[in-house]
Length: 295
Image (cartoon, rainbow, N blue to C red; front, side, top):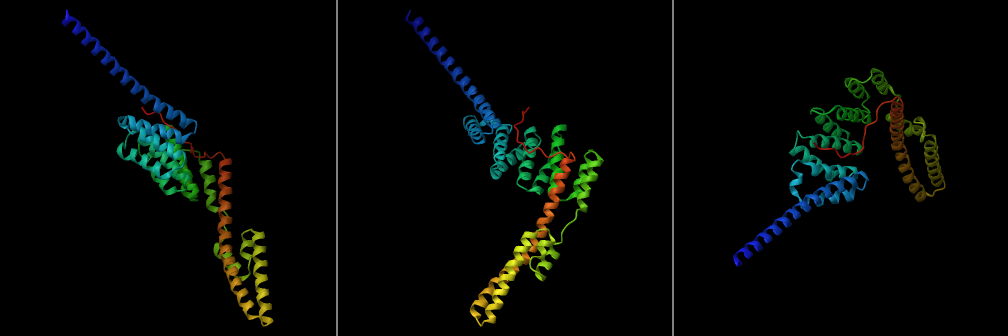
């Protein structure tokens, strides 16, 4: 009788232990799903710091969840969304290097190209796009990548390459012809702007269309030159030399800004042209960061 009772106690104990173990594992997997799901929810609400915390929590509790690079991808995209270049680059590059042909790697390359484009590292953005376009990608991703590459050329003001690339993607010839017009934009000569300012202070600014800056430069240089002349004329040599020193600084600065005003005018012209292209229905790049559904 005692033996039977003891067996019953052992069976009950083992049953309780098994139930408890299953329950703990169930809770662990439920927590796992909750960390990722909640992190994804926070990301969509643009609460990137909190989503990053959830992803780190998931990695800490379940390191194997990153077996396909999906957690590194999530962390990289979340850091990219907050424009944390170094951290985003670390995670996304890790995905590309460790899982080069995976779906996660394709999404990482696309996210890196967007990040570099936003930070004006157009050459690096172009590298990632070229690598992405050499992979087997769906039509939507390809279209998005092609648009980013077009705008990399445009932002570098390489209008001929932009037009040729745009045409090669199979888009309308009409827009590629319009892009080529950027090669013939009227540009100001920085050399001429500097030379004019050297001959007549403020003239280089006026040449570039910056009349107020030119007038200010002329008045400033004229005032110090006249004051220095009057000081020397009245035998006040100390004051004269001090004013001459400052006038030489203003004069040199006037030449430098005369050159800069030409560059500034050229950038303004090119930016106006880019705005015109957008009004001609040229697709702007999609720079929004999204979490993919990893198959």
